[in-house]
Image 1: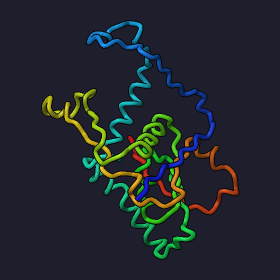
Image 2: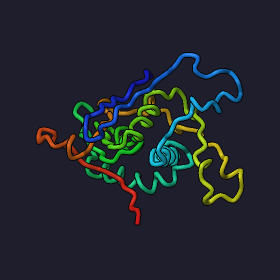
Image 3: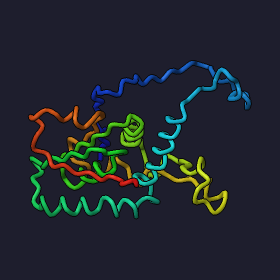
Image 4: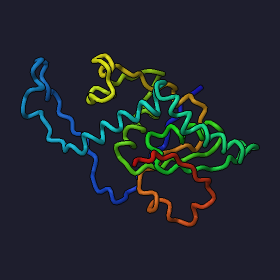
Length: 211
């Protein structure tokens, strides 16, 4: 089966930051202490560091086998309702679904696997960059290894818990049987979908309530 790529249109919104990746050839020497060079240090705001840490923890929930129990609790009720509401789906003209707050795209992908033309919408560029990487650049199951709890001392019984690696993803997105038309769209939900011509989609979402 040939691999497919997921369309990731980025809609200009109030997020007025331009994403740049700057590379400098031979900027880092082979010295084991090269990373100590003050010229290589970046002053990253703590708020951005926290957002990256949040994304890494969310990767475990959406794209690791360790997150299956939580995914089943959050996503299965939605998928089961879709099956009830659309028991007979036309493959030639599949129903359309929209998932606002799609995060890293797993729920949108699972809906697409059921035979729906699904689009996930996400406001956070941090989430969009990560979901694009996983959806479009993964070549095999468990290809990447992350250490999601290395920056946190909470809920760890030992150093081994804090340093435990997690392999991602637990499925290969390109070969997961997604329906043609699956995509992720970046931008503010109200601004991106304010055109009346975009009516006719079922709306599904899963949010975490934080007290």
